[in-house]
Image (cartoon, rainbow, N blue to C red; front, side, top):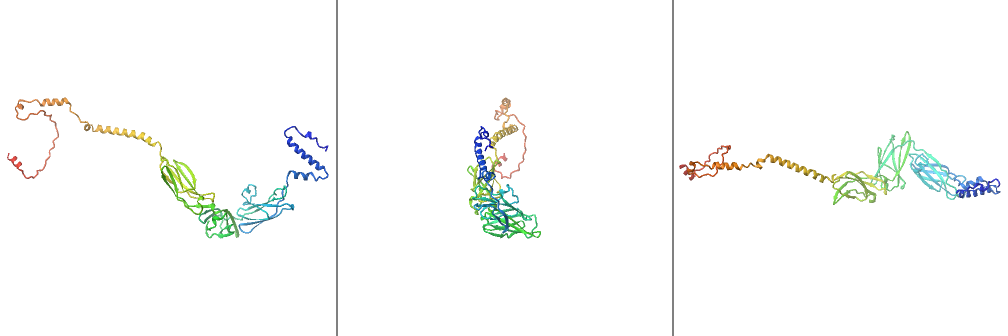
Length: 439
C-alpha cells in the first residue's frame, strides 16, 4: 500500500474532518478488497454500496376493447427476475396521448398483482397506458422504468360540448356536432349495474334519460355510435355521477319586517335529497352595499335600517357534500327607500325658515292691500269739536222755535243716492190707514 499517500497528508484541519474520515475509512476497505484474493471487482462492489439497481420493466404490453367502455390490458413478467423476488404492478391510464409527467396528474391509477388489468375508460381523446414493476421483497431494488403504449382516438369525434341537467330521476343530455351522422345512436352505461341502455327520447342535439338508478351511480359512461364515411365509429365518454349536474327549480323570495329585523323567506321545498344538501344563498344589498351569505335554513334575518333601501335575491345551492348544482336566481325583491339620516334636521333647518319668510311676506302684502279695512281712518278730534261748536250756534228764530233743540248737527256729506221703485202691495186697507187718509 505504498502507492497510497499518507493519511495525514489527506487531512486538513477544518470542520470537514468529520465528513472526510468516514469516507477515507470506506476507501481503505474498498482498496483492500480489490487487492485481496477473494475480491470480485471494484466495479461490482461500488454500485451495491452506493445505488440500488432498478427492477427490469414488464414485457409485451397489449390491449383489447372487450366492450366500448372496457379495456383489457395484458403483459408479461420482467425478464431475468430473480426467483425469490416478488413484485406487483402499477397501471396508469391517461385519457390523452400525452404521456408526459404533467399529464400523469389526470391519470387513473391501479395497482395489481397479476399481469392483467381491466379498466372502464373512455376512448374519445385517445389513451396513454403505462405499466411499472414494484418490488415487494427484492432487497434494495427500486421501481422499474415504465413500459408505455399509446392508443389512438377514434377517426372522428361525433359530438362535443356535452352538458347535463339532473332532477328527480330525469337526466337531460345536450351536445353539439360538427359532422352529419344520420344513424347517430346514444347509449348510457351504469357500471355498478353492468347495464347498457339506449336513450329513446332522442332529438337533434338532445336526449332525456329516465332511470331510477341515476342518482345512485358514482360515475356514468356514454356511447355515441354511427356510420361516418362508410365506417362504424364509436365515441365513449366518462362523466361524474348525475348528482354533479343537479338542476333545482327557481325559488321565490319574500321580505317581511318584524320588530327591528328584516326577515328573508324562501318557499323552496325538495325532498329528493336530504335537507342538508340544500344551501340558501342570499344575495342582498343594504344602501347599495352588496352582501352574500349561505345558510341551511329557509329564513334569514338582518338588522333593519329605515334609512336604507334593501334589494334581495336567493339561489338554492346543492351542497358539495352531496354533489354539485344550483338553481336560477329568484326575482329581485325591494324593501324601503334610501334616505339621508340627517335629512329631517336638514329639512327642518331649511323649510321652517322658508315657510316663516313666506308667511311674513304674504302678511305684509295683505296688510298693505286691506289697510283701510283693518285700520280705518279716525277723524281728527279738533275737527269734531270745531264742527260741534259751529252747529251749536243758534239764531233768534231758532231760539223762538217750538222744535226741540239739537246739541249736535253733523256736517252734511255727499253720498250717492239710489232710487229704488217697489211695486205696490195690494193690501186690504186697515182702519189705521183709513184714518190717516181722512186726515
